[in-house]
Figure (cartoon, rainbow, N blue to C red):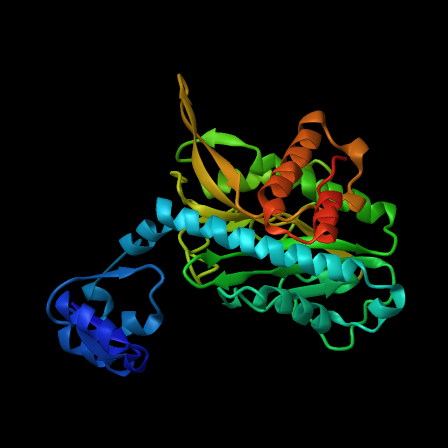
Length: 367
C-alpha cells in the first residue's frame, strides 16, 4: 500500500503507525510519476470522481470507472460518528442561540452600522468560544434582502442592515473530534411583507414535507427531491439547486455519493447524514432557504417493505414571525411545535444564564 500525503503534516507517531500497517509513505508530488510507472501492470479501478489527469496518465484502456467503495462506506455513519455529530450540533446550536440573542437585541441604529461581513464575523466569534471549534465548515453566506436570492453569495463589505428585509445566513462549524455542521436560517429585520411571509411559509412546508416523510428503503435521491418540491410546485414555484447533499464526519461538508437532487440515483439505505434545504429566490427582492442536517434511520417494516425516516440533527428554531399559521395543516403545525420542543429540551441544560434560557424559551414557544 502506498499513501501519497503531505509528509510535513505527519508526526513521528503517525508515521510509525502507518509503517506498522505496511503503508509506504510518499509525497504528493510523486503521485503522477508513480502512476506512469505502473500503468502497464494491468487494469486499474478508478473512481468516477477522479480528476482528468489520473485518467490521462493511466490511459483509458487501462481503466475501469466505478463508484468508489470508500465513498460508499464513508456515507454510512457508524454509531460513534453519529454520537459525536450530535454533540457537534448541540455545540453549534448553543453558539447560534447566543449569536441570535446578541443580534436580536441590537437597536435599529446599531443594526444600521453593521454590514453582511460584520454579521458573519459576529457569528464566527460565538462559534470560536467553544474550545473544540476547529474552523468554519465553509465561508459563511450572509445575504440581506436581494443578496439572499443568490444561493452561493459571498457577503460584502458595505451592504448595511439598515432597512426592513430578510437576512439569510448559511453557515457551519467543524468541531475537533466531533463533526461538521451546516445550517441555514432566515431572520426578519423590521417588518415583513405579505409576500415574504407567504414565501417563507411555503419553503417551510417544503422542508416539512420531506423531513417528516417515511419512505421505502432504497428510495433514490431524485424521488425524495420531488417530494420536497411539491408544496412549491403546487404554487407554480421552484428552486434552482438540489434539495440536499451528503455530509462527512469531519471537515467534508459536501460528501458524495449521497445526494438529494433531480439527477440523483443514490439509493438511501439508512445511516446517511444529508441536508434538506429547499429554497425560494426572488431576484432583486429576497431569498429564503431553510436547511437542517438529518440522519437517515430505520422507521419500520410491514407488508409493503422496510421504511426509512429522518432524524433532525440541527437544533436551531425557525423564524416564527415569518410563519403564516393559517397556511399550515395540523400535522405541519404539530411538526414545528414538536421540533421546537425538542430544541428547547435538548439545549436548556446548557444555558446557565437565566436571560439566555428565557430567550431560548421564547424562540421555541408554541405557535
